[in-house]
Length: 103
Image 1 (spheres, helix red, strand yellow):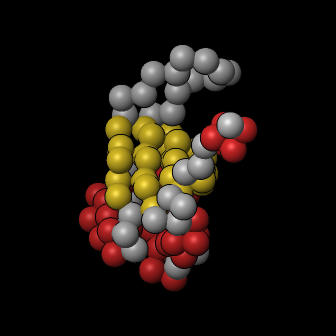
Image 2 (cartoon, rainbow, N blue to C red; image 1 turned 180 degrees about the vertical axis):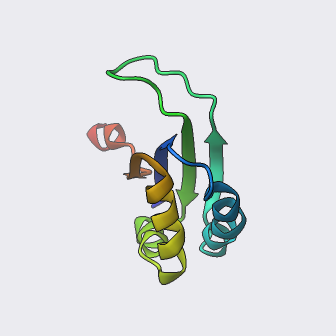
Image 3 (cartoon, rainbow, N blue to C red; image 1 turned 30 degrees about the vertical axis):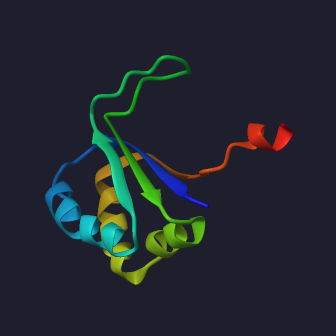
């Protein structure tokens, strides 16, 4: 089952971004991941607080592959740089429609 990684990012320092994009994009692609969105064009329609500065949406072939990426040694230094230069949230969403189970 496909799995989607969603990152909500608010930058405190941009020093890490160019290297991150250059090096992490091939890591994601190597595992079969596809970037569906990397954009600062975010409009909050409901909820508390403001919209994040940037949203990233990645489709992975499975949750196992997404976890392999997130916990990989190759990604570790870039993950640290991202965390040091931004704050936000990173979550996984299964590509499953539970409403279809009810029919």
